[in-house]
Image (cartoon, rainbow over the protein chains, first blue to last red):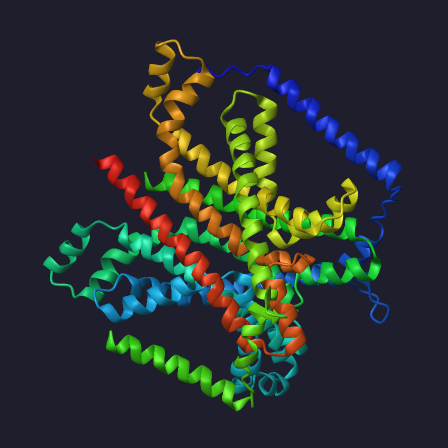
Length: 294
Length: 253
């Protein structure tokens, strides 16, 4: 390839011109054709509001939605990792039965689009599983302190069933992808490592526990971090089953305020901020870890 | 194998028991009408067939635009142009760090009225292509950079221009490597097209949701639509596996 001098090429000017032309056209459409008057003033009010009773500044819908999104991502990642690790290990098992179970689960979930899966699954969870564990009775029986801890961890107590169904459906879906990451991690460990484990007299499980997994974990963590960001993004899908997270709030506000432009652009910006900063942090950590290993 | 069958049987039994406890009335006899109707001896496509057709249409057009966007972005990133690289980076970061649902909303609620056209289907196709284009550009870039440096030097030394080098030396080697992940992107297009049900594009999931709304036969509808997607994507996954094997064989030979 050619030497890379920092110099403006004709292509640069073409691109500059194109970007300016697009911006100018959009500006023209907004100002002259649609005669749209931007009004961003409502947005801050949806981030935080002034509580008349206590006089304090409290988070409003958009921030509450963002918190719910982050809670869903956090609990979803924990649950999905637990299921995913079991399935991933099962897929590398030498016995046929666990391999088949893992294969069936992963194949099933990865080949059905998330949206129909969420619809079907949400219906099941909310009508079949959650009533069985009687979560509402449990929440109702908590003391004040207990309720506070619960609200910090899982969000508003009256929406907890709604929240849990979202978390469970999402993590069932995410688990299939994590299972594949774990499987790839385990399989990337050279055969010799197993043989070394067996030759010092470890059982298969012990070899996995003391030799293979510690090495696999190192390789699995960067893709898992990426999966966490994917989970934050995909958590927006549960808005379709009325889980009250950021996208759901945005939908509601956009309709009630009739401010589709501002609300959706701002919501996109919020997601971008969260995901981009997380991605940068993960990147830096990964680089530091790689440097430390050397 | 026997254990697996027992487990699957147990799972089906659980589902069946759960449904039976809800007093759910199965109405499978109404399902064929979702696929076709017979009016005066003529066959008319039912909602699910219509929806499937739209889904395939979205995937096909989406793939064309995805490849175009992916190619342009990949070439911009590999170019010497400062503005080109900056533009490609901004595009990639924005697309990667926002949810598809929000992108669909922005295309539908913001860009569509802004640019003055009113066609949810095409807004959806373009939005999906912009989304998948980010992944396609990575695939294309990886394919191109995986061709050894010496190949560039060799083409330069026989006097090929950059364009000729791409055309005769680099791409013929890079494209086979790109095919399997590209087929994966096609599968993703089909899967992600279901999100367009959010903005009134009448693809398979939208039709299914409407049917559930009209008939309350949620289990029958989703138990039919799920396998429809499964058949589509598993067929394509088979193609991916086949392509991968072929590429592998071609390389080792």
